[in-house]
Length: 315
Image 1 (cartoon, rainbow, N blue to C red):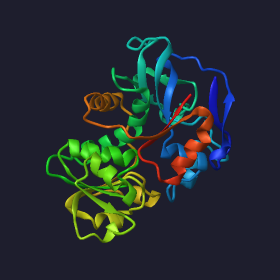
Image 2 (image 1 turned 90 degrees about the vertical axis):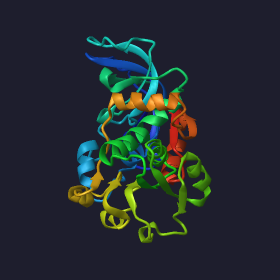
Image 3 (image 1 turned 60 degrees about the vertical axis):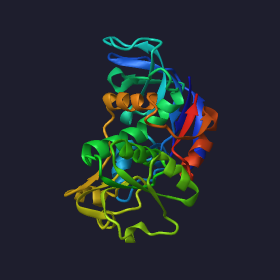
Image 4 (image 1 turned 90 degrees about the horizontal axis):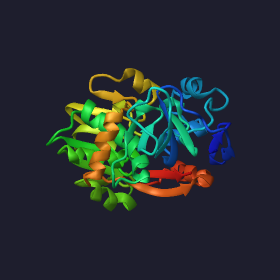
């Protein structure tokens, strides 16, 4: 099968397409023919060894000191089940599924092997590109807003980085839960973010949000340019600060209304999000779709920091 190999850390051009053996599903696993896979900021961080401050050594210990330990990156996919391993009862060949592979990665390929419990059915009417584009940002935003910040009607939410994969979902989900949303983005994305449901948009090139006079119940930083100190200044008493991309120091100190880390990859959450898309309650934002051979171009767009929503590759 064709797969994208990253055998050394570096710029987008280190990612190259080669032929590798097709995996076979083991007990409790399914083999999925990938129709669409997301190229996320997480993939780009691993490929370039660009980790949040303080995480350089821990991340290299986790992913590989000199090169990625697992050279096929990508952990968000949507496709069709090709084969199932022993003990799999609820998923069968021909089923349309999507999911996330966690630290196993491997989704930037024609086929990916994944535990059956990590996939969700793709509903009729939801495209593979939308399913692949939904899961990373959608599950992250859902976890922080619903499970950690308990957003409900009347909550005032600030989303910093409102046009990206995580931020575009955070704006929509906060509105879905009844919140009043302020989005922080560039001037060129202002109308786009308003269309997602933000009642007010702040242009970060003009206004320094860290000095804003307003206070919010939830501050959701999706891009990593707020610290614990600067984010807390924007909170009302009892508010929650979400640092989706935090330094090691802020991660270790996170307490008393500060939440960091990554969200869990739960098939039940995937199914909930997919149903919101199927019922037109949630819009998946895909900036561009590339063939697998153009993985370098996909990475360059992600690295630019100027993408709207998600970048997809199709094997």
